[in-house]
Image (cartoon, rainbow, N blue to C red; front, side, top):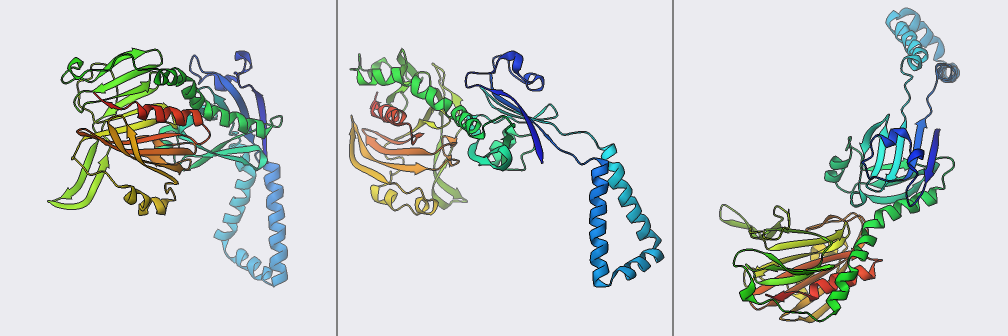
Length: 412
């Protein structure tokens, strides 16, 4: 039976003097602790080990006596010196072992502003961030469990990546429901921040555009951020000739993504393979080519826009998307489709899917919560676009933000 001690909980952070010294030693300078707990599993002492062994021996004596095999076993032990010595050594180890290996395993758990902490005897065993885990919920004896959907995530945040599940232990004075609510709030914090960061962008998106970007104003081989405003920026790719408005505080990465057939010795094995390129944080003046951008406001919020010159590859049709057999197998069939979409010079169709927590999505990686995946296939003068946008199912403001980003796409 486990025992636990808890040192307090606060959604705004515990006082520095109340933080357990073991946890305080591994914190970053600005890292705050919202909840902490200590858990020491009970160990059997030598007397308890001896009593338990005596009880098992008495039960075995009675059982073999009832079956008539006791006398034969005793006679064999009397004749077999090695077996007799082995049994005596086993009893000695049961009694002496707890005296030798008495070191207790002490676990510390914490929910901080940056990560979850799981420490064993003062050493960090796990430190996942909000986007690394899928919360399972409460378990008996005050445990709250989560899981790591992919081995790559486990290797990045666990000292021992063998097990896919883990958890924290609530103390005697803790309300497990309150700790679980705090854990969910901790994971949802990046989503709330993304929503706040998108407010200025949404206000600008609804206002008239001040000055359209003219092609002659663009550098010939350099992508540029044109007219950054408070809360919003306009990113231009002059090589492919398109522009898009994005929330300025969101993380922005670009890459050259491969998209084409898989051929081996001149034989086409698959008509289409998409491979992610080397992502890089976008910097103004970036002179390297890119055909894909990913703008993210958090682990479960963002857009992924891939552009091609028209004719480089054929876009799917609404019928092929609706009848996609892999979507049916995986249970992510589109539940909403809209055809005949017009966005400035672009036209095409869009679908919406509900994606479960833990799914690994190209361009985004693992999504820790359930999201709506919004997909667009658009074509315009000399350009075709494939777009994915994700936002939590319970975040309509962020879903609208994703729509506004896509609506801002234009030829440049």
